[in-house]
Length: 168
Image (tube, rainbow, N blue to C red):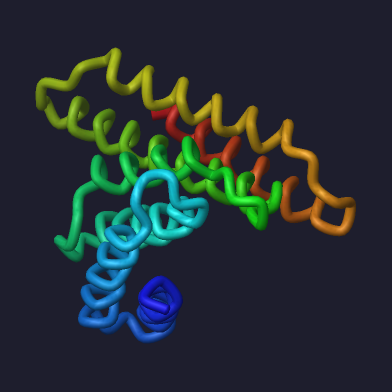
């Protein structure tokens, strides 16, 4: 119930841009995660919801979480998606979200470097490598033919974003 309410508030934020909705969404998703300890088959859902909300908060400069925190939640979600009701499409979407967050962090590091800040090039390369691994996982997922267009869209979006960063 906490997860559903937190997720719904995040969706409402997408429509209304009311920052308080995102704050409440993140708080409820954090609570939901606490109620789904390691080993809980639905923990991945809370991690996915929280990671996605934190990534959006960071992208929109709301100050409600960090990029690293979002990536950590999403990465843990990928590692623990074992629920029998988790579909291949769920897994593909989670890998897509991880890849996009990693690419966004690489883009941020590149922009900082271009502004004269000290940036570790291996960090940028590692994020892009991990994004490619997620892209590979999406392309290898076995999805019902009725959902293949969604998978192709996830692959295309991820690849296009990675290519943009390589051009920076």
